Amino acid sequence: MYRIGQGFDIHKLVEGRKLILGGIELEYEKGLLGHSDADALAHSIIDALFGALALGDIGTHFPDNDPKYKNIDSMILLKEAYTLVKEQGYVINNLDNTIFAQAPKMKPYIPKIQENLAQILEIDKSLISIKAKTMEEQDSVGQKKAISTQSIVLLRKA
Image (tube, rainbow, N blue to C red; front, top):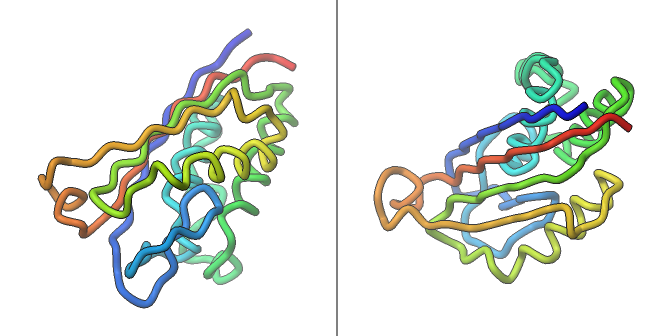
């Protein structure tokens, strides 16, 4: 049996924070604002995993008003989310992600992000697609005020 899930996240870009996507720190003058490390890519993957199995969303499992999640590494949350998926008897068949950012350019970071996610999710990196798009200087992403991500996952019974 297969289950499909999709996730989305957006975070504001601010000064004084590191920019982390897929557990990798990117060189940029701004970072994402959030209760955790604000890794929007990890957050959209988590929502896709939970959505595929109707397990709620990231806020249900890791509420942003819980002090234990303050500044937490989102790779820890992703690993916990995937553990819940495996406990339900599923594994990732493939994962498709899009990062929407006007800046910085994502292409140099994509292989590292794929490798990191593959390690965390215990799958081959060939099963992880990461694409990057600008918003052609439109909306908050295009005006370099935010970064958003979208993830779609296909799970299969183990």
